[in-house]
Image (cartoon, rainbow, N blue to C red; front, side, top):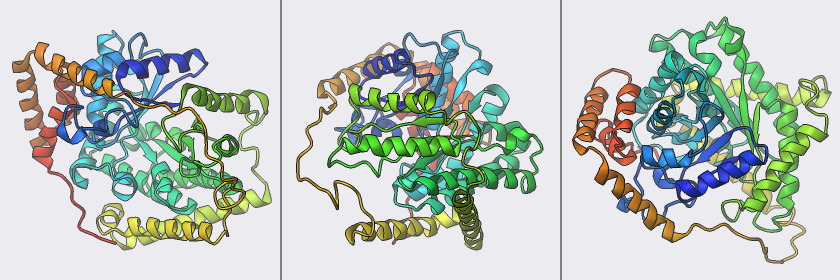
Length: 472
């Protein structure tokens, strides 16, 4: 279950609650300043502290976030992109402080920068240095952290931005192929890193379409890894994916209806073969989930897992005429998009020219027009609306927490060895201007208690910040 809000102390409490309720792994949501590589006390971060996740500005925050939790006893997913290498370095440094061996640490960093340019817009650096950072993490994981998934290639945000199912599938897999190409160009053997690539898909409302999407994804990935990229290890052919129920489909009106939506979406994900699952809480159209709503969402997963029997066999809908037709249509639509992307020069040129962004925007417009004309019904919104206002408890971030978080950052800066920090940041800058893998100097800078913002400012100075040149 995706969790994170406010201070690390508060999120640690939620983590412990979820583990006590039977959750088997942790999934960290970071707040907006962290996602953009700013410390909480940065003037540009004012007012954004903790509102969509937890604030992590230094190794000290990471220590608090996982206080009392052994990192070699769980797996952790961290949804972070442009600053992913730095946040991962903090996690690995903490694991070492706990006495854990890096080859025993398991988990995932999202680290999918390509979809940021087309969908979520949390990019910072231009595409080429951003791809260098991603490839550095892939290389470091393959050599030192073999149980870690260094990229979670994500269609979720593409769908949330307004794409249709075919676009979500095609653009996600195209991104995946691009990461494989960059790693191979680095000199990595495909079978040394491909088994640890993972995927993250959305689960929307069209039940059978979603199942067909997941089945097509596995088929396309296996074929391309084998025939195009020369992978011979069967593990490289497997598309392992996490699924999350659709945030875009949650309604602020009649929020109890969201429990039903999430249940059906979760069932589609399981029938489609997901390896892990996040079920959204009913109140997330309003705010971060309350403890009660988060528990209800977790119980939805557990009922599907333990009471329905749908996990008793692999691909339970395989052979169904309709499901097979949907699977074939998804595959054909994806290959058509692969050809169109190649026609504009590949994924990065397709992003830089705005081709992919325009395709998503057009699909979003079509979807909204269908809603407005009531060709697509959303219960409680454009039909069956009672006009009643929702009355649900909302989790709100305490502004006092922002003050305490800033005090904590200032205390870290006061007690650390600032000469050592300056030395480590100079070494990081030198490495960034060269060609070496940036993970080792990042880990050293993290151990000196350099802050996220300080390390990101080094990269901003070397790589610059990206400004798109295209327009709708």
